[in-house]
Image (cartoon, rainbow, N blue to C red; front, top):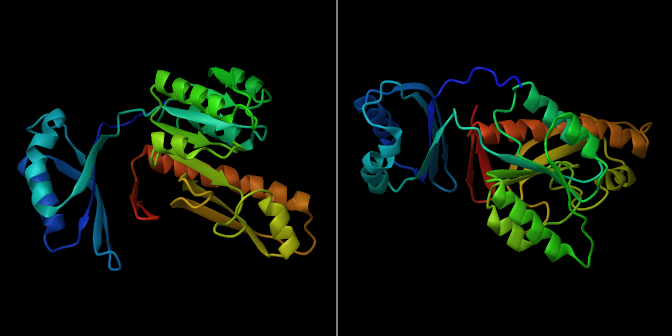
Length: 289
């Protein structure tokens, strides 16, 4: 596997009430401890009066261990009301993929992972159909078939959750997994389940959105990647894209064009999640460049 060259940087993500001096306080802390800021981006939301920031810095000459970062930074964070976390770019989060029969998003993610574009590990693939096992075998990733129907849904979810825990899963990607997850399942991985929905949300929620779009005669179709919440297709949106269609396009044409979009939109969302570029506030996200 080509994992590429990943520099070990530290990434500080901050959300707090907006006020003067926040950028200066964070930059001064990094400077005082001999860190070198490589990238910094921030967003102030006037409606919620929140400040959101992503700071990536080189800790190679930092005068404190990153394991001690919390002890040193907490007094500043507490004074300014910061909700924050520190990540390291060298860490490879564990991503479990759930998939049903449609394999286009799965294949795209596995190829990007193998090529080194996605800096994460994939400990397992879980499906409610056996169809995609040859793909998992080709990429040498363990595949588990967990059938789901109306009678065994709760049992199946418990089995999946046990596997996720056993393999230390950090986040989950629904690569066209055509099952609605229970509230209990979603609560076990808050803001850590990424879905791809085959429409430009909030339009055409639920099943067969391309058929709904065709029936409405729309001129654009889209795809949306979002975090999963208890409300179907209503989670914070990470990425979207669209493609133009015409009156000449059939439902099958919409399906084909849409699948190309789905792959791109989902892979972008996964990459941004892995690179710690996403901050959530309310039902919205900020995605930093």
